[in-house]
Length: 87
Image (cartoon, rainbow, N blue to C red; front, side, top):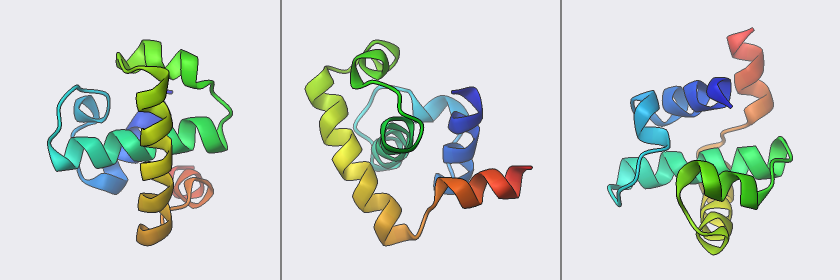
């Protein structure tokens, strides 16, 4: 999870603490959304587990996952490629 936070922070050009921080600032929302999408869609984490970690409702996580999928698609962000860059 920490490695994913670092990757998202790098991709979205925010500080790692901002990825999971509360707030509605655009940068944080986009970073958090991409984090949720990759955590659920790529790594298989449950929305319930994420909701506890991020202090969001499961419905909020679900919306973030959808938003994150669009961010990944439109930005051309692929977790596998980011993992290869890091290794």
